[in-house]
Length: 128
Image: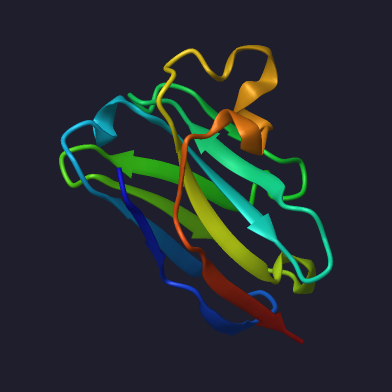
C-alpha cells in the first residue's frame, strides 16, 4: 500500500490543523494506522494510532486531549485533527500502516518497527 500524508503547514500556537493520510489499495481498511512525528535532531516519536476498524485509539501523553485520530475506510483515509497547537508540535508528521491487526498488542502501536508501510510525511511548523 502507498500512503500520502497532506495538510501540513505553518500555523501559530493555539491554532488548529487537520492532517490527512490517503492510502492506496483495497487492503487499506485491514490495516491498523499510526501517526508519528520527527522534529529536527530528534528521534521519530509516536503520536497516535487507530485499529483497522476504528474501535481502539491511542495517544501520546503530549497530545492527549488536543489531537484526535479518525479513519474513513470507505475513502481509504486516516485523519489527524490537531487543536491548540504548541511550538513543540513542530515536526514532520508521518502516517504508517501495520498489516498485523494484532500488532498493537504489548504496545506495538507505538513502536515504529511495528509498521510495514510509511508515507513521506508532511511538515507542520508552529510559530509563536
